[in-house]
Length: 336
Image 1 (cartoon, helix red, strand yellow):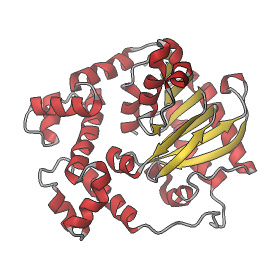
Image 2 (image 1 turned 120 degrees about the vertical axis):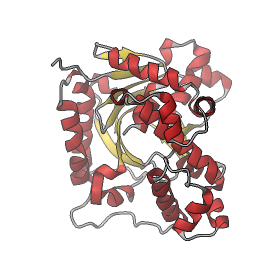
Image 3 (image 1 turned 135 degrees about the vertical axis):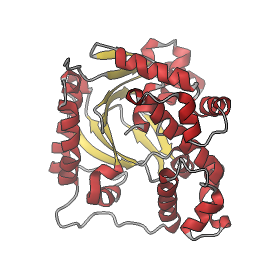
Image 4 (image 1 turned 180 degrees about the horizontal axis):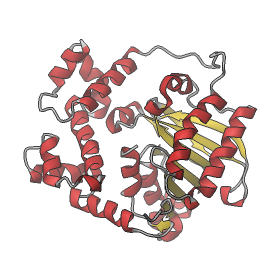
């Protein structure tokens, strides 16, 4: 059996006309965050590059960019159903030129991130919350708090090394390293005595939101998943439910968009052999045409176009596939 190298997706504003660079980069970042828009002159001068490596249960990225302001609103949290943790290693120089870690920041994608600055050089990993098991809550309490201690810097050096050498790994090694990394993260960042610098803040609505998201995820294939049944399951009134989901456009919209993300994961599973029409039926769409319209409205491309992009990625036999196509990284993110 041939062992293929890991595939790295690359993005650079240098691949595009200057007038298009910032918008393309903001779309790429837009899979997780909203970027503050600069004025027209700053946008025309904007320069950035990202390389992202898919290691199965972990995405690793190296970024070189002009500093920019990002945020992740409650509306985004409700809308995009990304329940992952990002560990960002901030560097004193380019990772390609030996930049060293000077701090590590955990960004809980299930919490609000108000306006924050992304440094010029950083390496980040994104892992699903569930993979951290009992350490997930402790790590989430460190949200947006830079860590400078020795354990954090040791972890930072490891993650930079994973990015630097990951593209050359073959066979089961990428997934093996990805499986070991959550334990290392918890060991380096969570104090053994459990005393954390920041105390958890009680937020009843966020707790309800987390429970609601779990129910929605579990019942996406059920035609009986409606705002009314969700309210009954949570034991809250419809008005409370609508207040929680109001920033994202309402409960029905959130359910529909969650089905879109699940459908994208199913389409990307090329080994299953499932027809796109069967996927549409599984997730309660009344017809193939309605599914295609909804999928395109949500993702920006049709189900067939997305499957073709995934197929093209799989057929690539080299180590690095240069592309400015924004379809692949959001698909990786949805499949974590």
